[in-house]
Figure (cartoon, rainbow, N blue to C red):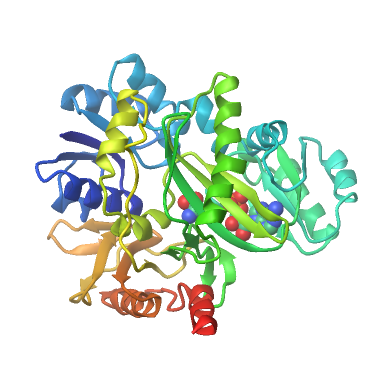
Length: 428
Ligand code: AMP
Ligand code: GLY
């Protein structure tokens, strides 16, 4: 099968790795790809947010299926354009992708469909937002409605901090148009779980639950990042809870999208808070999570390509479609540059030592220099995933693997999976 893969991060390297395992004769073209993906296929220069340029590439390549990684491509309407050109593509239309690209839309949809989520009010006027905040107790969450590169959410410890966040977004425009509409949202207490599911718009094929580590520093301290690591499965999200999330979150959300004329096909990602009152939605993403994908796919024994190709062709998933997972655990450690996430340093040469047994290296922000050396090119440089029979072993090998990716100013967390590790220790 010929696959065009859009994107060039660690998530896309993991997708490329899995798709190549699913089809030994896979012909992979990645736009733009990265040096890791280059060992699995051909990389062509491309800007993932330029849907017209990607359509030109697809017309030339004639892929059997296009798989889209980043939300920017989906927000730019790549799926709409490819469908008009009768090119099979895996992902939601621009209108369906609003579940991620407009938090105001997502919240409205959840409320109308009865999906459990935090109470929120949307505002475009700062004075009105200041008044609305007074109806909430601190902590309170201020969110830019649009895509803000993972920086649009501020958890405010006091109402004064909330006022500052409101002013920064609505008066000073720090996120531009993405922050011209905000949500003032109730703070939810609990542990976060990511549940990703493939869908044809109706049927739901959930993956294993995963947990992201968004904070930069060990012990979940420091600023929010795109994700410093992830693991799967997550024992607090056992099979009955996953069933409950499918019934209470995925089915009503997909139903409301269908009824609104925005049928969602592709991968729907629910970021959930597991509260004392049950699971509640923090956010939806319209694409695979990064770094959750790097943790999940190495555990997936059954084909990912088959359901992806079926959904891209517009086929319905059948009762036979299921995802089978190997036993054990997977832990992914992200290796980042100095200065990440605010001002990532680039251009440091990378030296790769041999990975420990069971560890996989996924490239993210790497490039080849003209002389063929590997160098850093983005904040998150690589992700190292280790799969093992026990959770503790997966944690150790993942951190040991991350230490094998060497460059000046390197930073990684050696405590990925710490909550789960504590749970395992308590249970034994
Ligand atoms: P988001 O970009 O919506 O995923 O938000 C980023 C992070 O902010 C989440 O992963 C949570 O850790 C935190 N967060 C967002 N909304 C809430 C909320 N209502 N209550 C508690 N934490 C939240
Ligand atoms: N890991 C969070 C995200 O992909 O948005």
